[in-house]
Length: 277
Picture 1 (cartoon, helix red, strand yellow):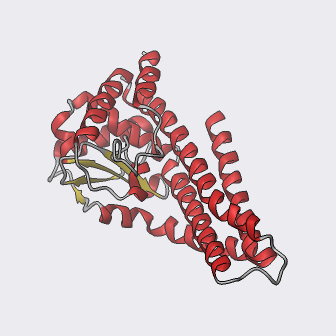
Picture 2 (tube, rainbow, N blue to C red; picture 1 turned 60 degrees about the vertical axis):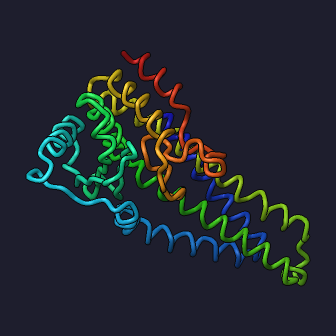
Picture 3 (cartoon, rainbow, N blue to C red; picture 1 turned 120 degrees about the horizontal axis):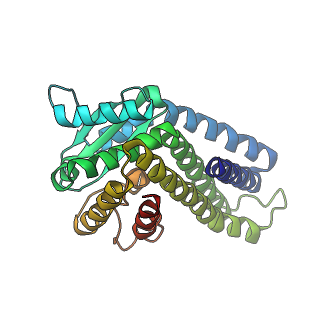
């Protein structure tokens, strides 16, 4: 409950930031336009984001006949979690990782890479899948999509504000050019920080929930240690817009993409899991 309250407050802050920069760009009409754009983008993300991200990572859906061990593992854990059976996808890449997507538990999917299946034991893979099912149960997949969409709109409006200053816009309404410029620069940074705070908080919740679903927090802790090492060693070509979805940050160690972490430190996550044993 505490995590949900914190997430709600952060989302409210992100929405407030959206309205603020909308007001800087175009007054009341700008605020209204910002809301309309945000609603439109969230509508599209609600219905199509899962399909887009699965296609982006070339994930292929598998059945019980095609991947019996993995399918049965997901099926058993979904029953433990009291969830409908999600669709199961495999990504053909050596990068050891996994993610969940879908707007709600009835339209969810769990995707794992061939790399993760090759380096984890069955118990460790159960811990990873349980973590992803906890994301689904907590509706983190929808929350993270909404946060990313609002942050994207804030960045878009900030870009509009900068271009309006370049071409001399905003002078007629008496707007302070320095104030608009400061907002255009700082708003995307603030939006990113809030988005990352939401993502990191949900990761801790999914770790705890996943440990309860599989009944073995040490297995998930062991898996995270292996995945951290694997993510650091792999040269993965991952779109930064989807990095927050994976169980460990696939961009860890990259010079620019790693400046803002979408995940809490793996060491802290492992310590919390071990304390649950």
